[in-house]
Amino acid sequence: MTDGFDDLETPCLLLDSDKLAANVAGMRVRLDRLGVTLRPHLKTAKSLDVARIAMASPSGPATVSTLREAEHFAEGGVRDLIYAVGIAPQKLDRVGAIRRRWGVDLAIVLDSVAQAEAVAAWIRRNGDPLPVLIEVDADGHRSGVNPGDTDTLVAIGRVLAEGASLRGVLLHAGDSYGLNDPAALRAAAEAERQAALGAAAILREAGLPSPVVSVGSTPTARHAENLDGITEVRAGVFMIGDLFQAGVGSCAIDDIALTVLTTVIGHQRDKGWIITDAGWMALSRDRGTARQAVDQGYGIACDSAGHPYPDLIVRDANQEHGILALRPGASASVPDLPIGARLRILPNHACATGAQHDRYHVVSDGHLTGAVWPRISGW
Image 1 (spheres, helix red, strand yellow):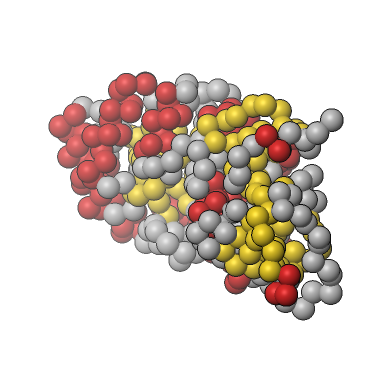
Image 2: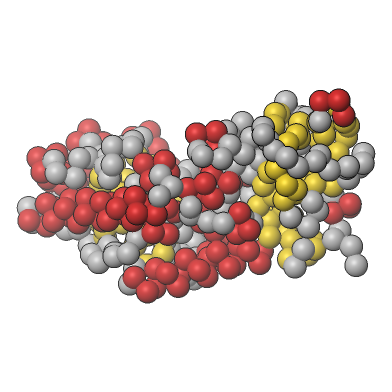
Protein backbone atom coordinates (compact mmCIF):
# COMPACT_ATOMS: atom_id res chain seq x y z
CA MET A 1 0.00 0.00 0.00
CA THR A 2 1.43 3.39 -0.99
CA ASP A 3 0.83 6.68 0.79
CA GLY A 4 -0.64 8.18 -2.40
CA PHE A 5 1.55 11.29 -2.35
CA ASP A 6 3.05 10.62 -5.80
CA ASP A 7 -0.32 11.46 -7.34
CA LEU A 8 -0.28 15.02 -5.96
CA GLU A 9 1.08 18.11 -7.65
CA THR A 10 3.64 19.82 -5.46
CA PRO A 11 3.94 21.96 -3.50
CA CYS A 12 0.67 21.34 -1.67
CA LEU A 13 -0.71 21.31 1.84
CA LEU A 14 -1.23 18.11 3.84
CA LEU A 15 -3.36 17.96 6.99
CA ASP A 16 -3.14 14.98 9.33
CA SER A 17 -6.70 14.50 10.55
CA ASP A 18 -5.64 12.11 13.33
CA LYS A 19 -3.33 14.69 14.88
CA LEU A 20 -5.92 17.43 14.38
CA ALA A 21 -8.57 15.42 16.22
CA ALA A 22 -6.16 14.51 19.03
CA ASN A 23 -5.10 18.15 19.50
CA VAL A 24 -8.71 19.29 19.70
CA ALA A 25 -9.69 16.51 22.09
CA GLY A 26 -6.75 17.28 24.36
CA MET A 27 -7.60 20.97 24.60
CA ARG A 28 -11.28 20.25 25.16
CA VAL A 29 -10.50 17.87 28.03
CA ARG A 30 -8.17 20.46 29.56
CA LEU A 31 -10.68 23.31 29.40
CA ASP A 32 -13.55 21.11 30.55
CA ARG A 33 -11.49 20.31 33.63
CA LEU A 34 -10.96 24.04 34.22
CA GLY A 35 -14.67 24.72 33.75
CA VAL A 36 -14.62 26.99 30.69
CA THR A 37 -16.06 26.90 27.19
CA LEU A 38 -13.79 26.49 24.17
CA ARG A 39 -14.58 29.05 21.48
CA PRO A 40 -11.99 27.95 18.90
CA HIS A 41 -10.35 30.62 16.80
CA LEU A 42 -10.67 29.61 13.15
CA LYS A 43 -8.14 32.04 11.68
CA THR A 44 -5.51 29.30 11.37
CA ALA A 45 -7.78 26.65 9.90
CA LYS A 46 -9.93 28.82 7.59
CA SER A 47 -11.83 25.65 6.74
CA LEU A 48 -15.38 24.57 7.50
CA ASP A 49 -14.28 20.93 7.66
CA VAL A 50 -11.73 21.74 10.35
CA ALA A 51 -14.20 24.01 12.14
CA ARG A 52 -16.68 21.17 12.49
CA ILE A 53 -14.05 19.12 14.29
CA ALA A 54 -12.97 22.00 16.52
CA MET A 55 -16.37 23.40 17.52
CA ALA A 56 -18.64 21.98 20.20
CA SER A 57 -21.52 21.84 17.69
CA PRO A 58 -22.10 22.63 14.00
CA SER A 59 -23.46 26.04 15.02
CA GLY A 60 -20.45 27.05 17.11
CA PRO A 61 -19.30 28.84 19.13
CA ALA A 62 -16.25 30.09 17.24
CA THR A 63 -13.99 33.07 16.70
CA VAL A 64 -12.92 34.66 13.41
CA SER A 65 -10.35 37.28 12.42
CA THR A 66 -11.86 38.47 9.11
CA LEU A 67 -15.36 39.17 7.87
CA ARG A 68 -14.62 36.86 4.94
CA GLU A 69 -14.25 34.10 7.53
CA ALA A 70 -17.49 35.20 9.21
CA GLU A 71 -19.34 34.96 5.89
CA HIS A 72 -17.84 31.59 5.03
CA PHE A 73 -18.62 29.98 8.37
CA ALA A 74 -22.06 31.59 8.57
CA GLU A 75 -22.90 30.16 5.15
CA GLY A 76 -21.79 26.79 6.51
CA GLY A 77 -24.20 26.94 9.44
CA VAL A 78 -22.16 28.54 12.22
CA ARG A 79 -24.42 30.86 14.19
CA ASP A 80 -22.33 32.04 17.18
CA LEU A 81 -19.28 34.09 16.19
CA ILE A 82 -16.98 36.78 17.57
CA TYR A 83 -15.12 38.92 15.05
CA ALA A 84 -12.08 39.40 17.28
CA VAL A 85 -10.38 42.31 15.53
CA GLY A 86 -11.05 45.92 16.48
CA ILE A 87 -13.95 47.16 14.41
CA ALA A 88 -13.48 49.72 11.66
CA PRO A 89 -16.64 51.84 11.32
CA GLN A 90 -16.68 51.21 7.56
CA LYS A 91 -17.20 47.50 8.22
CA LEU A 92 -20.37 47.86 10.27
CA ASP A 93 -22.70 47.62 7.27
CA ARG A 94 -21.07 44.32 6.33
CA VAL A 95 -21.37 43.05 9.91
CA GLY A 96 -25.06 43.94 9.85
CA ALA A 97 -25.54 42.20 6.50
CA ILE A 98 -24.00 38.97 7.82
CA ARG A 99 -26.24 39.08 10.87
CA ARG A 100 -29.37 39.61 8.76
CA ARG A 101 -28.62 37.21 5.94
CA TRP A 102 -27.74 34.18 8.05
CA GLY A 103 -29.26 35.02 11.41
CA VAL A 104 -25.83 34.95 13.02
CA ASP A 105 -25.10 36.20 16.51
CA LEU A 106 -21.97 37.98 15.29
CA ALA A 107 -20.31 40.05 18.03
CA ILE A 108 -17.71 42.75 17.43
CA VAL A 109 -14.78 44.08 19.45
CA LEU A 110 -13.57 47.63 20.17
CA ASP A 111 -11.29 49.47 22.59
CA SER A 112 -12.05 53.21 22.24
CA VAL A 113 -14.80 55.72 22.83
CA ALA A 114 -14.53 56.76 19.17
CA GLN A 115 -15.32 53.24 17.99
CA ALA A 116 -18.15 52.96 20.53
CA GLU A 117 -19.66 56.22 19.27
CA ALA A 118 -19.49 54.97 15.67
CA VAL A 119 -21.22 51.73 16.70
CA ALA A 120 -23.90 53.59 18.66
CA ALA A 121 -24.58 55.86 15.68
CA TRP A 122 -24.82 52.87 13.35
CA ILE A 123 -27.29 51.18 15.70
CA ARG A 124 -29.47 54.29 15.81
CA ARG A 125 -29.61 54.29 12.00
CA ASN A 126 -30.16 50.58 11.54
CA GLY A 127 -31.97 49.36 14.62
CA ASP A 128 -29.72 46.33 15.10
CA PRO A 129 -28.41 46.19 18.70
CA LEU A 130 -24.96 44.83 17.86
CA PRO A 131 -23.35 42.66 20.54
CA VAL A 132 -20.04 44.22 21.57
CA LEU A 133 -17.06 43.17 23.70
CA ILE A 134 -14.53 45.67 25.00
CA GLU A 135 -10.99 44.62 24.24
CA VAL A 136 -8.70 44.82 27.26
CA ASP A 137 -4.91 44.87 27.10
CA ALA A 138 -3.59 41.84 28.97
CA ASP A 139 0.12 42.56 28.64
CA GLY A 140 0.95 45.58 26.50
CA HIS A 141 1.25 43.40 23.42
CA ARG A 142 -1.02 45.24 21.01
CA SER A 143 -4.58 46.55 21.38
CA GLY A 144 -6.97 47.08 24.24
CA VAL A 145 -7.88 49.29 27.16
CA ASN A 146 -5.61 49.15 30.19
CA PRO A 147 -7.42 46.81 32.61
CA GLY A 148 -7.13 49.40 35.38
CA ASP A 149 -8.36 52.34 33.30
CA THR A 150 -11.72 52.75 34.99
CA ASP A 151 -12.57 56.00 33.22
CA THR A 152 -12.12 54.63 29.70
CA LEU A 153 -13.80 51.30 30.37
CA VAL A 154 -16.83 52.98 31.92
CA ALA A 155 -16.97 55.69 29.23
CA ILE A 156 -17.02 53.05 26.49
CA GLY A 157 -19.65 51.08 28.38
CA ARG A 158 -21.86 54.14 28.83
CA VAL A 159 -21.76 54.94 25.11
CA LEU A 160 -22.60 51.33 24.23
CA ALA A 161 -25.48 51.38 26.70
CA GLU A 162 -27.26 53.63 24.19
CA GLY A 163 -28.52 50.69 22.14
CA ALA A 164 -25.74 48.13 21.83
CA SER A 165 -25.68 44.81 23.65
CA LEU A 166 -22.59 45.03 25.87
CA ARG A 167 -21.43 41.42 26.22
CA GLY A 168 -18.35 41.96 28.38
CA VAL A 169 -14.57 41.93 27.93
CA LEU A 170 -12.13 40.14 25.64
CA LEU A 171 -8.36 39.71 26.06
CA HIS A 172 -5.47 38.15 24.15
CA ALA A 173 -2.17 37.54 25.97
CA GLY A 174 -0.01 38.02 22.90
CA ASP A 175 3.23 38.41 24.84
CA SER A 176 2.93 34.75 25.85
CA TYR A 177 4.23 33.90 22.36
CA GLY A 178 7.61 35.26 23.39
CA LEU A 179 7.95 32.89 26.34
CA ASN A 180 9.04 29.27 26.63
CA ASP A 181 9.46 28.64 30.36
CA PRO A 182 6.47 26.77 31.80
CA ALA A 183 6.51 28.81 35.01
CA ALA A 184 6.53 32.06 33.03
CA LEU A 185 3.67 30.80 30.86
CA ARG A 186 1.64 29.85 33.90
CA ALA A 187 2.26 33.33 35.28
CA ALA A 188 1.18 34.89 31.96
CA ALA A 189 -2.03 32.88 32.02
CA GLU A 190 -2.80 34.02 35.55
CA ALA A 191 -1.97 37.66 34.67
CA GLU A 192 -4.37 37.40 31.73
CA ARG A 193 -7.07 36.04 34.01
CA GLN A 194 -6.56 38.75 36.62
CA ALA A 195 -6.65 41.50 33.99
CA ALA A 196 -9.89 40.08 32.60
CA LEU A 197 -11.53 39.81 36.01
CA GLY A 198 -10.43 43.30 36.97
CA ALA A 199 -11.87 44.90 33.85
CA ALA A 200 -15.13 42.96 34.15
CA ALA A 201 -15.43 44.05 37.80
CA ILE A 202 -15.03 47.71 36.83
CA LEU A 203 -17.92 47.43 34.38
CA ARG A 204 -20.13 45.60 36.83
CA GLU A 205 -19.42 48.06 39.65
CA ALA A 206 -20.52 50.85 37.29
CA GLY A 207 -23.81 49.07 36.70
CA LEU A 208 -22.76 47.82 33.26
CA PRO A 209 -23.08 44.18 32.15
CA SER A 210 -20.16 41.84 31.61
CA PRO A 211 -21.60 38.34 31.27
CA VAL A 212 -18.74 37.28 28.98
CA VAL A 213 -15.13 37.24 30.18
CA SER A 214 -13.20 35.93 27.17
CA VAL A 215 -9.48 35.16 27.02
CA GLY A 216 -7.45 33.46 24.39
CA SER A 217 -4.02 32.40 23.30
CA THR A 218 -2.73 28.91 22.72
CA PRO A 219 0.24 29.26 25.13
CA THR A 220 -1.87 30.49 28.04
CA ALA A 221 -4.63 27.99 27.31
CA ARG A 222 -2.04 25.21 27.45
CA HIS A 223 -0.52 26.41 30.73
CA ALA A 224 -3.36 27.97 32.74
CA GLU A 225 -3.89 26.33 36.11
CA ASN A 226 -6.91 28.34 37.20
CA LEU A 227 -9.60 29.89 35.00
CA ASP A 228 -12.11 30.75 37.70
CA GLY A 229 -14.23 33.69 36.56
CA ILE A 230 -13.40 33.18 32.89
CA THR A 231 -16.31 32.13 30.68
CA GLU A 232 -14.51 31.11 27.46
CA VAL A 233 -11.12 30.55 25.85
CA ARG A 234 -10.48 31.45 22.20
CA ALA A 235 -7.31 29.49 21.37
CA GLY A 236 -6.82 28.54 17.71
CA VAL A 237 -3.41 27.41 16.46
CA PHE A 238 -3.38 24.61 19.06
CA MET A 239 -5.51 22.44 16.77
CA ILE A 240 -2.87 22.38 14.03
CA GLY A 241 0.38 23.38 15.72
CA ASP A 242 3.62 24.63 14.19
CA LEU A 243 7.32 24.95 14.95
CA PHE A 244 6.92 28.32 16.63
CA GLN A 245 4.40 26.85 19.07
CA ALA A 246 6.74 23.92 19.64
CA GLY A 247 9.45 26.43 20.52
CA VAL A 248 7.11 28.12 22.99
CA GLY A 249 6.31 24.76 24.54
CA SER A 250 2.64 24.73 23.51
CA CYS A 251 2.95 21.53 21.49
CA ALA A 252 5.42 18.81 20.57
CA ILE A 253 6.84 18.57 17.08
CA ASP A 254 5.03 15.24 16.73
CA ASP A 255 1.71 17.05 17.39
CA ILE A 256 2.00 19.28 14.31
CA ALA A 257 -0.79 18.32 11.92
CA LEU A 258 0.27 20.47 8.95
CA THR A 259 3.01 19.82 6.42
CA VAL A 260 3.86 21.04 2.94
CA LEU A 261 4.50 18.25 0.46
CA THR A 262 7.41 19.07 -1.84
CA THR A 263 9.58 17.37 -4.48
CA VAL A 264 13.35 17.26 -4.83
CA ILE A 265 14.26 19.03 -8.07
CA GLY A 266 18.04 19.42 -7.76
CA HIS A 267 21.27 19.27 -5.77
CA GLN A 268 24.29 21.42 -5.07
CA ARG A 269 26.35 18.65 -3.51
CA ASP A 270 29.50 20.73 -2.97
CA LYS A 271 27.39 23.09 -0.81
CA GLY A 272 25.43 20.35 0.89
CA TRP A 273 22.17 21.61 -0.60
CA ILE A 274 19.04 19.80 -1.69
CA ILE A 275 16.74 21.91 -3.89
CA THR A 276 12.96 21.46 -3.73
CA ASP A 277 9.95 23.03 -5.43
CA ALA A 278 8.61 24.58 -2.20
CA GLY A 279 9.94 28.09 -1.78
CA TRP A 280 8.54 30.94 0.27
CA MET A 281 5.42 31.10 -1.89
CA ALA A 282 4.54 27.67 -0.49
CA LEU A 283 6.05 27.97 2.99
CA SER A 284 5.63 31.72 3.67
CA ARG A 285 8.33 34.20 4.65
CA ASP A 286 7.72 33.63 8.36
CA ARG A 287 10.97 33.27 10.30
CA GLY A 288 9.54 33.45 13.80
CA THR A 289 11.73 30.64 15.13
CA ALA A 290 14.83 32.75 14.43
CA ARG A 291 14.05 34.55 17.70
CA GLN A 292 13.79 31.29 19.64
CA ALA A 293 16.41 29.03 21.16
CA VAL A 294 16.30 26.74 18.11
CA ASP A 295 16.19 28.39 14.69
CA GLN A 296 14.26 26.11 12.35
CA GLY A 297 15.02 28.08 9.18
CA TYR A 298 11.91 28.03 7.00
CA GLY A 299 10.86 24.62 8.31
CA ILE A 300 12.01 21.11 9.20
CA ALA A 301 12.41 18.58 6.40
CA CYS A 302 10.72 15.20 6.93
CA ASP A 303 10.44 12.02 4.92
CA SER A 304 7.15 11.17 3.23
CA ALA A 305 5.91 9.54 6.45
CA GLY A 306 6.43 12.82 8.32
CA HIS A 307 9.52 11.77 10.29
CA PRO A 308 12.14 14.55 10.50
CA TYR A 309 15.54 13.97 8.97
CA PRO A 310 18.22 14.70 11.60
CA ASP A 311 19.05 18.43 11.56
CA LEU A 312 17.82 18.92 7.97
CA ILE A 313 15.99 22.23 7.61
CA VAL A 314 14.95 24.61 4.87
CA ARG A 315 17.96 26.88 5.29
CA ASP A 316 16.85 29.37 2.64
CA ALA A 317 13.91 29.96 0.33
CA ASN A 318 13.43 31.77 -2.94
CA GLN A 319 10.04 32.34 -4.49
CA GLU A 320 9.65 28.81 -5.89
CA HIS A 321 12.81 27.10 -4.61
CA GLY A 322 13.51 25.69 -1.19
CA ILE A 323 17.14 25.12 -0.19
CA LEU A 324 17.53 22.27 2.27
CA ALA A 325 20.75 21.92 4.25
CA LEU A 326 21.93 20.81 7.66
CA ARG A 327 21.52 23.33 10.44
CA PRO A 328 24.79 25.05 11.44
CA GLY A 329 26.95 22.89 13.69
CA ALA A 330 25.09 19.68 12.91
CA SER A 331 27.03 16.39 12.86
CA ALA A 332 24.45 14.49 10.77
CA SER A 333 24.93 13.66 7.10
CA VAL A 334 22.87 15.11 4.28
CA PRO A 335 20.47 12.35 3.21
CA ASP A 336 20.84 10.97 -0.30
CA LEU A 337 17.52 12.05 -1.81
CA PRO A 338 17.15 11.50 -5.57
CA ILE A 339 15.43 13.81 -8.01
CA GLY A 340 11.68 13.25 -7.68
CA ALA A 341 11.79 12.22 -4.02
CA ARG A 342 8.85 13.51 -1.96
CA LEU A 343 9.44 15.33 1.32
CA ARG A 344 7.20 17.00 3.87
CA ILE A 345 8.09 20.33 5.49
CA LEU A 346 6.89 21.19 8.99
CA PRO A 347 6.02 24.92 8.99
CA ASN A 348 7.19 27.70 11.26
CA HIS A 349 3.77 29.37 11.38
CA ALA A 350 0.66 27.40 10.45
CA CYS A 351 -1.40 30.54 9.77
CA ALA A 352 1.13 32.02 7.36
CA THR A 353 1.91 28.75 5.57
CA GLY A 354 -1.76 27.84 5.27
CA ALA A 355 -2.48 31.22 3.72
CA GLN A 356 -0.41 30.24 0.70
CA HIS A 357 -2.81 27.40 -0.21
CA ASP A 358 -6.49 26.96 -1.08
CA ARG A 359 -7.03 23.39 0.13
CA TYR A 360 -5.90 20.66 2.49
CA HIS A 361 -5.16 17.15 1.24
CA VAL A 362 -6.21 15.04 4.19
CA VAL A 363 -3.92 12.37 5.61
CA SER A 364 -4.87 9.65 8.10
CA ASP A 365 -2.66 6.85 9.39
CA GLY A 366 0.11 8.11 7.11
CA HIS A 367 -1.88 7.83 3.89
CA LEU A 368 -3.98 10.14 1.77
CA THR A 369 -7.67 9.62 2.46
CA GLY A 370 -8.80 11.13 -0.84
CA ALA A 371 -10.57 13.93 1.01
CA VAL A 372 -9.78 17.49 -0.02
CA TRP A 373 -10.91 20.22 2.37
CA PRO A 374 -11.21 23.73 0.90
CA ARG A 375 -9.75 26.65 2.81
CA ILE A 376 -10.47 30.32 2.22
CA SER A 377 -8.41 33.48 2.07
CA GLY A 378 -8.95 37.20 1.91
CA TRP A 379 -10.73 39.72 4.11
